[in-house]
Length: 165
Figure 1: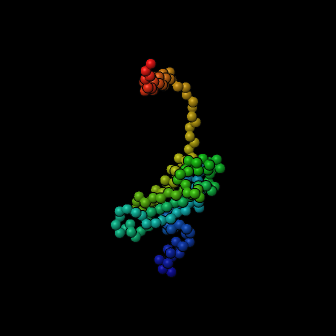
Figure 2: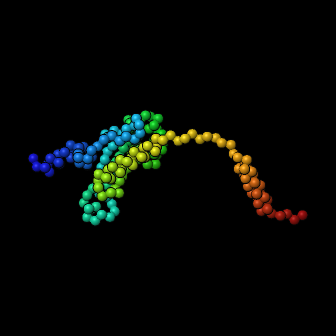
Figure 3: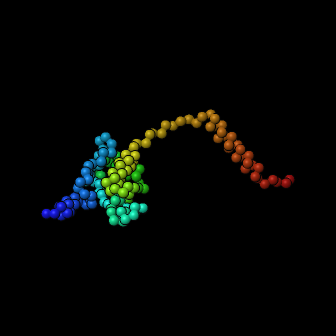
């Protein structure tokens, strides 16, 4: 068997990902106790855009990660609902989060950047917002509000038509 055939067979066994098997894959650790399994992340590579001359026209260095956030088992139902709400506009109709990276000329570096970005997005979406603490308005702010109201009322009073008696 030739080396070219052996690497081709290895790529065929790798599954839907188009990355060579030499690129180590592991689960993404988002936070303590939260890890996205590698099986839930679908990766693909495509031709990048932008400058790069002949290199950009013949190599597939752009990396696209697709993660089914709506059906993931990595999160509790409560955390998943919070994340889906926070990522609403970034998700597809099917609830997939798509992250792309084509900043670098290297596919491996773009893959690492896309994975970092995915972790950042999920981590930010899972953060619980700090509860709002009700505060009383200060005396100065009350006075400013009342002064503004009086000034607006006076302005409107001056706009009224003058009647001749």
